Image (cartoon, rainbow, N blue to C red):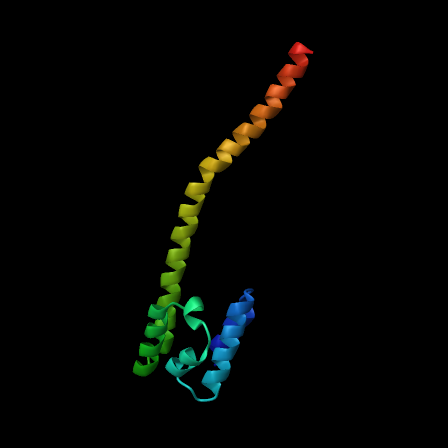
Length: 116
């Protein structure tokens, strides 16, 4: 299965890489996604159950490519939203750190020039 090989080549996480290669092997042996997911240890930690169910349903209905396209668009939207939210959360902390560092530097500068 070409998609598993592509994904395993692109991922940098060892656990995912091993899981995708094992999934590829099982599917090439003639197993369905449902049997392959059941055979892989701890697959629910790597691929959530709802995602597995969507893949199995798409395989059974013959719309696997369409399902993968929709899932990738959905995950991309979620990643974009999470990244945006993360920057909103981190920004105040960075401002405080910069304020503390600059305040310390300027405080030390004024202290040494005015009082020493």
